[in-house]
Length: 87
Image 1 (tube, helix red, strand yellow):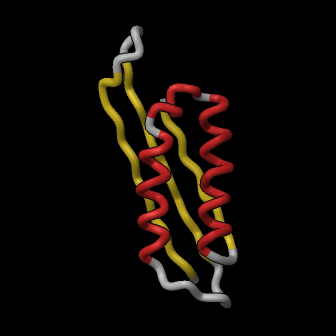
Image 2 (cartoon, helix red, strand yellow):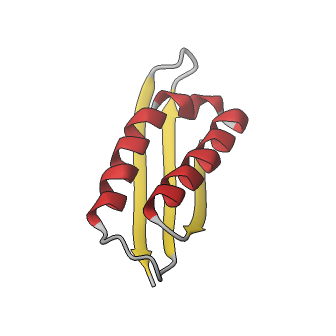
C-alpha cells in the first residue's frame, strides 16, 4: 500500500498539523499504515524543525510512503520520501 500528498501552511506548527490530518486520512483508508505512522511523524517533525521560522512565507511539504506485508501482517518492507521548504 502506498500514499502521496502535498500540504501547505503559513507556519511550521500549522504544517505539522496539516501533515497529521492527511496521514490520519491515509490511515483510515489504508489501516496498515498505522503501523509506521508514529515513525513517519517523527521524521516529518525533524525535517520541518530544520527550517527557519519565517512569518512572511508559505511552507510546503510533500510526503510519500509505502509498506509491504504478508497475509499474516508481517512487514516485508517500508519506504518514505519527504521534501519540505518555504517560499
